[in-house]
Image 1 (tube, rainbow, N blue to C red):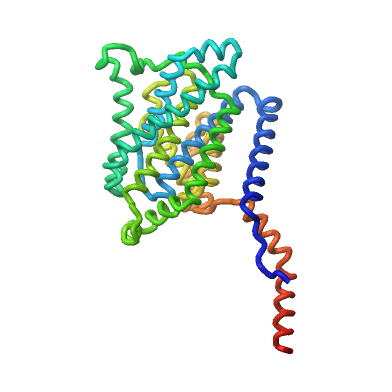
Image 2: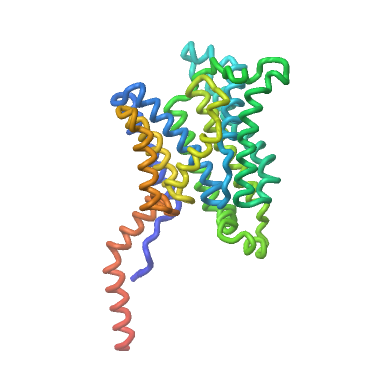
Length: 357
């Protein structure tokens, strides 16, 4: 009798995850079309954008173990790149006339362009910055984020023509972001991060987090993998910025101040460093909670801050710590729990037969 633990094959796991994603999409689509108001739909889209930002920062902070404080800068780069590109294309006229399918290539191009440009900035900043650690890295990335904001505010006076429109803001951006697009980007971001962290590249990144010196001693190119994780984090933040531009339709440099980076970092810390599910849950909670407390306007920020303080006191490692939920592993545990008595009985019988012989 086969007494091995029951395990699910990889195709079955992927199929389960695909089915869950489709069911979640259908449920949320039904809610957005029949149950939620326009305001609630906008909050839901904001949740999706913040999930991408939290998951992307979790790559550099939770998995790599670094402390960048300029994530809003990468978001700003992606937002302005996508916004300027979309304004220069005929996508606005196509969207106004209801030709969404014809505008789709421009939307996809904007997302890719935003991610690539933000990734390039991540490389440019990451190569010198990641030679430092701890507070020094935090200060450099903080400076980068502020430099991006100042450049976006003043670059028009240097160029001599309107490019980002300075403090007045980049306006009349085609509002191409929809719930379907945001949901697909969230799934894509989580899938990419999951596949990276389950590969040998992800194991190398985790080893650097645990002990960088030991990783170097066994031949892991730490500089390469630190830059790789930093660039991947920046690319996803740039894509989130592009969605943000297509969601609001206008951009202002003041939106991407230092506190925006802190807001994203709080989402990662609250959910748990190195936990993708924790980032998803915390981004959802920290986006919905301020909106839910609008009825108590005077006490809204007090209640919001108090909730964070209480959470950090009783759960200093975040909601989930470094735990990541897996439906396939949960099903495996259920199967092994059901079949474990039979396995033990079979082992006991084999042992008794062996003794008698």
